[in-house]
Amino acid sequence: MPPPLIAIIGPTASGKSALALALAEHLHAEILSVDSMQVYRHMDIGTAKPSRKEQARVRHHLIDIIDPVDSFTVARFVEEADRTIADGQARKVPLIAAGGTPMYFKALFEGLFEGPSADPKLRDQLNARTLDDLHAELSRVDPTAAARIHANDRKRLVRALEVFHLTGKPITDHHGQWGSNPRHPAIWLGLTIEREQLNRRINARCRAMFDEGWIDEVRSLLHRFGRLSPTASEAAGYSEIIDALSNSRFDEALEAAKISTRQLARRQIKWFRRFPDVRWIDATLPLDLQLQHAIAQVA
Image (tube, rainbow, N blue to C red; front, side, top):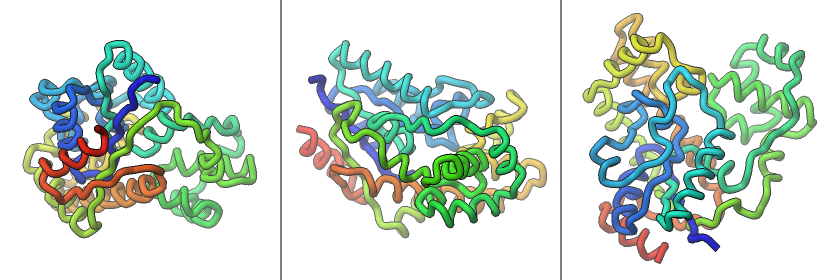
């Protein structure tokens, strides 16, 4: 059996990247990013991407692999991640899978839910409805999916309702039928933090990102590419800043980015609570103590 991966999960701003970096240096490991937004080049500040210095300290995989005008699918992530894992095993290099995209973790370790083929007529009918209407129906037929899918994410709202109408079962039930045998053996570590403390961290980090030049980063992206792809546009805070570039209401954009990021964190927490066999670590501990707990768990 190949050595197990080490998976580090937790909500945004909980400190996953810092712990993964410290543990990777201790174990002489490399890091597999499980983040749906850090795959995009030039989206650095708003995605809290590891700095160039951090990436020089430890090799990172699946960061900066496509331009933000391109779409990136869960299927492609699994394909790229499988290739990275196989390469690491061939080189006998430990890998730490760290990130905050629950669907990527679930697909990588349990497999992809393909679902029924798209029904063009049904999809057109669903797309003709308002976002509020779509989210309201999904809340009735599949509250779990409605809680994890953003109310403005038309693509996923439509797909979830399409699956329900075509199969008669919520998409959450189909997800629950994914294989119980993991595709890759793993040791699971998770960072946990009380919600109010996490909200304070998120607010402070968003403020720091604005001070670091997040607005200029978005302005540069639009100047270079003209637009962001539908999947890149889902990154928390980016659409809020894009809107603010037309009216210069950047204080409002900052508050909206905080709200969007806090909503993301709540969805992540709901997902990660359902992951089995996670060994939880207090995210408020100093990093050296977190590292000690992590080393004890993976030894």
